Length: 165
Image (tube, rainbow, N blue to C red; front, side, top):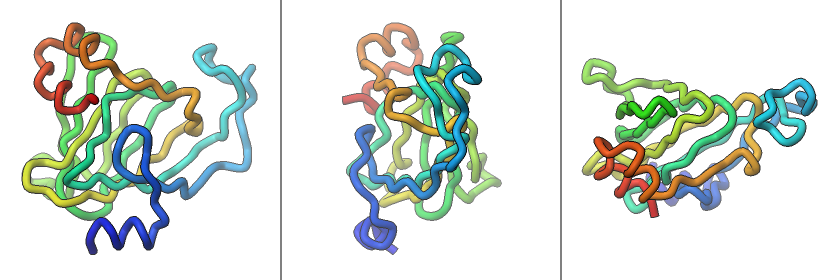
């Protein structure tokens, strides 16, 4: 497989954060606004899921969601993900198949954690899945600003620069 084949076969389109995606599931049932924490501004589907493709000329720009997000690694090359929680700490994680080298096939990003991802050097593509609960809504999506994030997380300034536009 190559990225062009995946884009065609899975009917992927450009994602605003970078990479390509296709929504594959949106629960038919929703949580009413009154049942959700105050950070939400309306009802949300119980859950959503997408395919998400990173290529060697794309990255997932630093962003955060109001919901928890679970990443699933399907195929391709390893992905490096930067996670910056509100506490001011941070970490990188690897998504991939090589568990003996610390890669994870699945990773949970809690609500409110800044996140960004790219292929590890030399990678061509990675096909991931992302499941969000309560379900994804673009109203809950916030893109990070390079200068503000680098100021809050100075130990990760170099990677923040690579993962912002």
